[in-house]
Image (cartoon, rainbow, N blue to C red; front, side, top):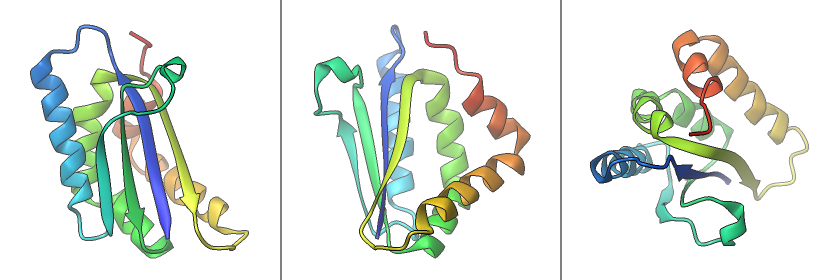
Length: 129
């Protein structure tokens, strides 16, 4: 199992309807066939972390992770969410003892961005606010 976790803060002044659209897009990602289960909502960690929201997606294995990363619903959510967020952090929780799994995940992410210049520009050129 791979649990892919996103933490972020909405930019100051983000309209309530944009926040709602972002959360709905993340919920649609959680409904994809590649996702075993998902949790999307307010961030409950320390305030000092400066995150406001988070989502976590459970993926059965590396094949499910690959499908998750490449489904059109995921790309659509990227273009809805990224323009409105800052302080964006992603990490994975792995429940198996495969020493190569982290590098396999990183390679899938790297290849996804290398194949999509528009997405690369979106996720690498976010001003703080």
